[in-house]
Image (cartoon, rainbow, N blue to C red; front, side):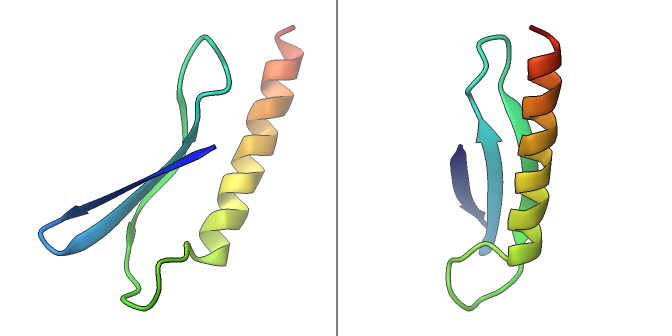
Length: 64
């Protein structure tokens, strides 16, 4: 999994995706980071990313 960090006009943005599958790049979650404290991604966002990754892995297993 890769996290892309970008800033624009003083705002921070994150896109978390995986390139694990040869047929496509799947963006699991993208959001504007609102907290000015620290660089960590909020737990709610991490939980959502993990759920979407598990769902994608199940879907890809079903395609085999």
